[in-house]
Length: 265
Image (cartoon, rainbow, N blue to C red; front, side, top):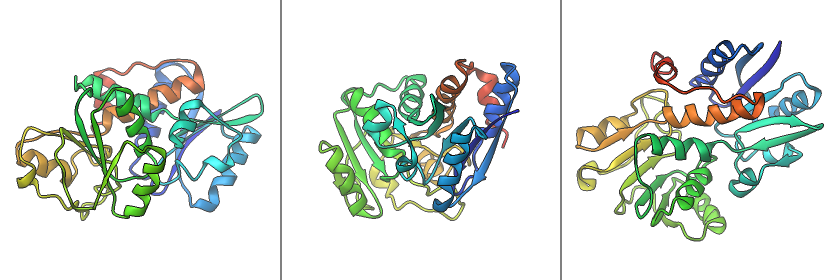
């Protein structure tokens, strides 16, 4: 039986196995998809298993989207542009890195009919998924992209690649139409993001890349203060759709049944 994996640390929150195994059944693909928590030292073994054909495809989540790059033979143009890889496969004896997060995020905003053009975006975090968000927003003509990270130096590194972004100190807020939590803050109940929700006001869009739990404190508080909220469930589903297509040459359907499947955890 063909084997696929999602790797990360932590990885227990991932619904990738649930979604891909559901699509395997729907599309009559004889395969199994599992999750595996690894450390940085475990990346080489995973890539070696792809090279040997023991694993046919891997999704990469926090915190390895950039760290995995040196172990790959090639990358797609988008993976090179973002320096962020979340999907891996083997083709003609080469292990290739792909980015499906740009597509996932763009499709998620299309689904809620949020027009990016001319809007101001505030991103919290500068980790593996952030370059994908920046590229997606820039391609759709965002007027301003502001980034704030707990470690400012990491955000400054990002600015070298994307000089058009603005960096502000962690905890400081600037005017925005949409704010995105792209940190891992929210995976644990005790996690807090230092935001003055009262000062921010209402009728903004708060978006959390995290999809499990469904409602982080970031989203719950934003709603309390009269803002619209969205979690990362739809982005997750669409990035998975493209990964599935890359691996199997089948574009699985994302419908209400698919999204409901991701609700009951």
